[in-house]
Image 1 (cartoon, rainbow, N blue to C red):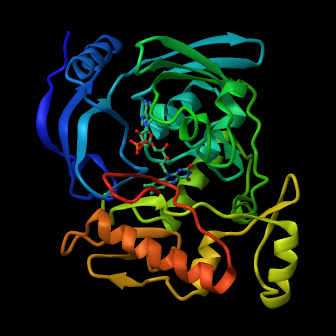
Image 2 (image 1 turned 90 degrees about the vertical axis):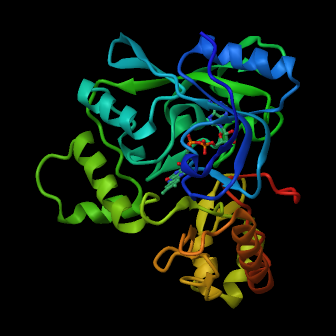
Length: 346
Ligand SMILES: Cc1cc2nc3c(=O)[nH]c(=O)nc-3n(C[C@H](O)[C@H](O)[C@H](O)COP(=O)(O)OP(=O)(O)OC[C@H]3O[C@@H](n4cnc5c(N)ncnc54)[C@H](O)[C@@H]3O)c2cc1C
């Protein structure tokens, strides 16, 4: 079947920041055959392709030319071996729903990543992570189609070049592939990972046996307390990555800012919480027209929707914050979500 290809479609309902922008051409594909038809259509009409999942990691600063393909494919399959199970999820599967499904099946490992918005196909793009676990820890392989040739390619973990909120697909393979499905290795043994400090301290009041289901519930509880729900307050989660600085830069900074939180990383680097840097500059709760910084979460920029914020307004605010942090700490903040439709490169 060929998908219906429409013109001039509003993407406001398709992005968690609810930013106003239009796709020149748009279609939603529910199986791989429809996806291949859409790619063929784009080739014939020389249209640029933009894959779209749940729209929770995008800043739409303007209209998108070419064809936006909403990946809406579904299906989960598995094969077990000993205490582990390899589970393959179609790209359109909702991430959090997938976490719940695996827990119901007695397959463990995804629980710390509960309630992350978006779909499976986008998870490898920035190697999603939270509460001490990242996708790379569970990842086996993915299948993708190369946009230029229509060729099917399988990527194993090493080939994906995963790093902190980063992968091959944000770098040399950017815009070249559409991910079709993702295979993760989960465990049938109910072990929990509660090494992450916020999780550990939340567990201090917990009594009884700690199961992966409990960890999932707890992660959901913490996330609901900490992060605004995009359905009520449109946002894209963390707007900036936590910067990595060299250990020698840290030594100099600690002389001036002894209270600066810092987390040692491999290769003589240290991670600094971007939220702390932004908070220290006094930006938490700042409003600029219809957009602003969340009043409790300095890392989350929001679209207040009253006057209808735009992507350009959000990017202006982000630039103001980046400049403020640079002036005070000489640390450059990098945007976490992908920017589309802006004349400026990010
Ligand atoms: C409230 C909130 C909390 C969040 N918390 C976290 C968190 O804790 N940890 C974390 O890592 N992230 C977090 N995020 C960010 C976001 O949820 C993830 O990055 C998620 O993986 C994005 O999925 P998506 O389907 O919405 O992707 P989209 O926003 O639709 O797309 C993101 C990028 O991936 C590309 N893409 C999408 N699907 C495909 C595909 N099938 N093939 C190829 N490219 C594709 C798009 O073109 C785009 O460049 C949060 C976001 C919000 C709104």
